Amino acid sequence: MKIKVSFLKEKEWVNKYVRFVFHIPTFITLGVVVLVPVSVIIYLSFTSYQLGLTGIQWIGLENYLRLPYDERFVNAIWHSFYFVGGALFLELLLGMGFALLLNNNFRGRAIYRILLLLPMMSIPTAIGMAWRMMYNRSFGVLSHFVTLFGLQPIPWLSSAQLTIPALIIVDVWHWSPFVMIILLAGLHSLPTIIYEAAAIDGASKRRQFLYLTLPLMKSYIIIAVVLRGILAFKTFDKVWVMTQGGPNFASELLNVYLYTTAFLYFNFGYACAVGVIFLGIMTTLVLLRIRT
Amino acid sequence: MNRTFLKRKDIRWHFIMVVISIVYLAPFIYTFTNAFKPRTAVEIYPPSLFFDFTLKHFVDALKIYNLHKNIINSLKIALGATGLGLLCGTFSAYVISRYRQRWMKIFIIFTMVVPYMVCLLPLFLMFQRLNLINSIPGLILAHTFITVPQSVWILTGFIDGVPPELEYSAWIDGCSRVGSFFRIILPLIKPGLVATAVLSFMLSWNNFNIALVLAHSETMTAPYTIYHFVSFEMIDWGGFSAIVILLTIPTIFFVIATQKHLIRGFMGGYEK
Image 1 (tube, rainbow over the protein chains, first blue to last red):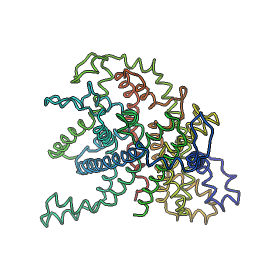
Image 2: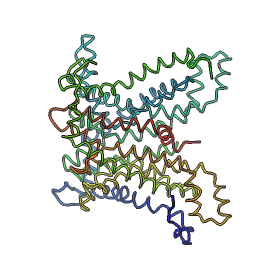
Image 3: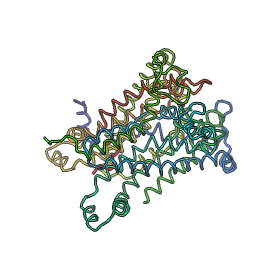
Image 4: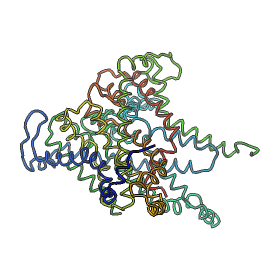
């Protein structure tokens, strides 16, 4: 493809300052879409801005002082961590299981890799609705299969205790292939010699897995946990489509609470304070990751 | 050519994997069959595999819910966001990789960590003032929030894999730095560019949050059509299933065609 950039090449200063010039497009786009919003949200968190109703009035730390007493906010933080923790744990299990299965050398296993990849590629909103259909109280498959054993149908999305586990299951279904891919790459990179040596020494399959595979996979597991963990905190569409915050706010994640406060209650200033705290939590988690 | 195409132990594995695949993909199968069932057959338990075949839901999807328009919107936005992502990504990834700019890497990581909602609140206000709500260019700009950091991240990994010696020899021959970027790095990065494009497209196509906040009637995206069903008292499960089929089948073909690139994209920065 012919790109007319000869004018760029001739300019002396472009070549000298490439390291900055090349960042111009990125800074323009990300500046508008990230830097400016983050600054605005920090500023607005100190105001009492109600969307479209009042003007912007500086009120200092009042929003932040209200936060710890706000039950929904504290619950939202707990729900987010509960959701991410549960989802991560199960995704690791399932992902590792799939990766181990696909690691065995049998002909034509590529098809299964594609098949198992499909949930990850689907539209999250569609996945949310499909599972909502299955969780449905009146006719959902997942609610009613226990009637085979004579029990009452399980009210997945209408019960406060069951709703986050229900969401976790959906997330696990959606993202286990992601973990599987990463762990599969890790498994492929393991040398086979050590397994042969272990087999000669009489180690059982279980032993081989626990003491050989797992320690060697540590870095891949960490990568999977970090990548998936950060993504998991951002979950919004699945939750919104399935429960909109759950029966009586029982499944309200931080994201959902943020959206509700800002756009449904129009409490923008307060929402910005929530947002800043949310951002702070995420940044802390990432900094922890960079440390290790 | 081997005497037997499939050994006996292969068949055993296939059997296990088929069972697992069917169980795992059951939600897909369930939704797909629901799209062809009349309303009454959908909302009963237990769901049966034998039913009256009907195409009414598909007709509804196109007529009532304006599906084709939303798909075109999603397409435009995804293409625009992917293009912008590649543009910014290639340039930035080059300097991050060659000059080892740690600070920029940290900035990109920060950008990837920020939750969409946190940025969407102020963006909503900004777009309101600039009259960008409900506009395709506005949405493309908003989607770059997803595509640009991802592109930079993955492409940095790929450019790291190109040995700098190739550029050194070009410089000796009188090529400028920028020139070597266009003539040497870019052609060698082609698989990386494809992987990034595929991944960015997919991320932008699937996104829902941004459309929820920043879009309105004219610029609805495909995922929003699905959400549309939630607003009403009686949820049209059949219609929803039909829309899911219409939206997922292209995705399936897309995945099959590009799965190698997608995997490479996901593994991006950790390639050896």
